[in-house]
Length: 360
Image (tube, rainbow, N blue to C red; front, top):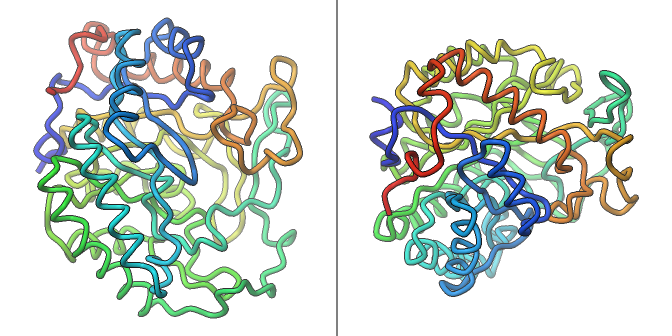
């Protein structure tokens, strides 16, 4: 079953989306100029939670003939993930955000706010300034530089408890998403390793995503397919796309060298271990016509200020955090547009913005 049956986009091919850091008129104009058609609002720790705020954001994007298609953020979920007192209050806030998105006609909630990683250790890297091609700076996960004996305030957790907490969450929010017309798209753990610092991590394999989808078997319970994270799992990307693609609403287009077991470094989109042409062809073959965005990009220090110390791993909306600077994103979009033309043909791979907006 193709992805089009899950999130009802118009158009025959996927579309290139982007986060913009910061999301301002300058970067919206840039996105339109380089061929982006859709915008993803990004904030690792929060999101606008009123209809008025979301409509204002959508209209800001539409002024540049861009569609605000996804919120990559979300309200706090720490108590939900941990199954602690206060989770029901967090669930009510999460539901409020879903309903507001539905009223504002923003169809996808994904990734940053909607993952099920332990909040005291979510995305893990041991360096954010590893030199890669030409002296660009990227991030790395290296076990020899990591002290796994440290324990957080959460202490030890179990996979069984994490799955029970996830089931409680899904059964509470998926019906709300169905009613609102919003598609939930869960992001993998990063790194996708089963236990770090005593904390169980559950979204680390393709099997885990099939289990998630079976808990509430609804088209509104779906996947953010981060190609980088799945590559870190050591799986074949095109094969896994064909396995899970029918439940994917959103794609992160990034790559690495290495894996979660042995360590990895993030690369330019054209310089990793995945055959990106074959990956895009697999998205074509499963009928996916949603949004694909370039995910983490290297910092190009001759053109951008080096990361501020406090923003190497946070401050994502500022454009100073690792992976979320803008110059590398321009390269990534150009590379993706070339791949789109190679896979879909020039006419279908160079679509106009207006022609490929989803129904509203």
